[in-house]
Length: 169
Image (tube, rainbow, N blue to C red; front, side):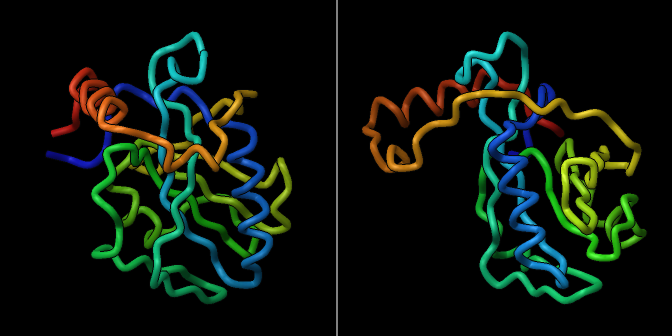
């Protein structure tokens, strides 16, 4: 079963994009790299289909330098909420390199953020490197302190939601 959802990415939460910009700036002059995770738009009271990018996973063991960031793929969790990737270009170039395109094979959205990491310094691409739009949405994200506040009924509901979403071949 593939790890990446189909069904579309409806947007990115404003708080998540602010986190991305800060993480890229904090990592400078090295590249930053993370995995994007989505939450069903319906769970966030967004009246549209698809996922809203709400989380960024930093993968342990990621190697960073001023010209690349390398994720150890064996450290990426089997996460059905994954919708793409994000990484920075400290040189400010807002287009994917050949190396970037090689990592875009999975996921629907891939964000490149360039120095100086402000609101106009990012672009979104599909898995083939074609530019695409990604709307920034003002949504209320769950309180991080509630992350571990769940029981079996929550797990069952999550599994039921996963069966309602199509999967990529």
